[in-house]
Length: 159
Image 1 (cartoon, rainbow, N blue to C red):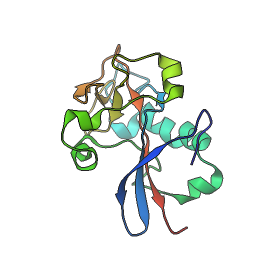
Image 2 (tube, rainbow, N blue to C red):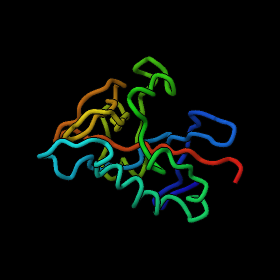
Image 3 (cartoon, rainbow, N blue to C red):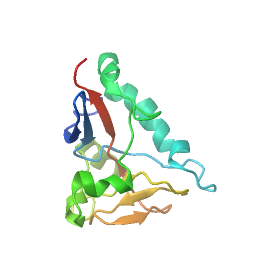
């Protein structure tokens, strides 16, 4: 599977009998979590969720690839929930460190130590989102912080 600006490299997080959970190896783009930061919102109302299941889905996958994506609740594309990071990536801060794709780096510039911050899903109301820092630690994003996106999706194996 590939997108417009560059191919997406995926890592396998989970395999079940009929599907596989994938997450991008690199953070792919910078997207604002909440367009109306004056009001805190939940994930289901976020601009990021809309972007992932709209613009990103349409530009990253062909019609036939989209047909193989298995809906996780109401979403075809999502981000990892903060509670699942230890299970899928490991318990150490170093396990959560991520680097930007070439495309993402071209849009936002070089990050300190080369790693970047990336959004995670939470069950809390937030203005700007929650992220994993370039050092692998969790933090609440503020207006001046920068966080990128690592899309996750379930893909059907037998279609």
